[in-house]
Amino acid sequence: MYKTILVGTDGSPTADQAVAVAAGLARQWGATLHVVTGFRSGSSAMADLAGAAMVDTGAGTALRREAADDVGRRAAESWCDGVDTELHAVAGDPADAILNTANGVGADLIVVGSKGMRGARRILGSVPNSVAHGAECAVLVVKTD
Image (cartoon, rainbow, N blue to C red; front, side):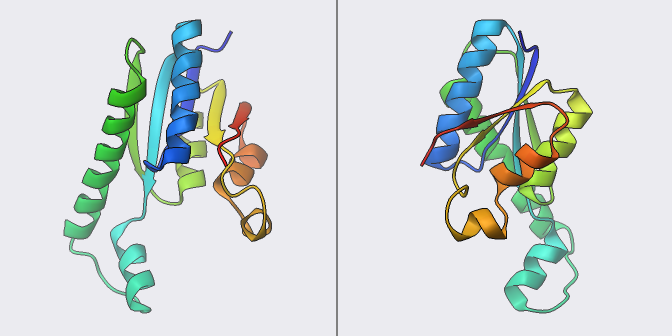
């Protein structure tokens, strides 16, 4: 049915549930699974922490990219046995990272967890809401909270 499935993860237990479902679907349909982990680029992350504009020498971004790579690798090792899996560590807002990567790889299904779809985060903006409204393909929201 679907041949290119994408799932986002931040390494949390709720995201693990979404990865497990996406991997199961990819296994069942013989699809390629793209696992995306978004991370903040250096200058914006440091500015958020310091409350001011700062310049990243590149070391901070490299460390965040490495951490995002590790999150994706752990998800793949835990859930994606027997599935053709590609990992993507993408700088930027998590929802944008998912949507841009989905468009780039031609995903026909995006899988996200439901965390943040209730309460204030639902109104202020959450990754699953942003993905569901911005996707150019089918979206499966897995009940994770």
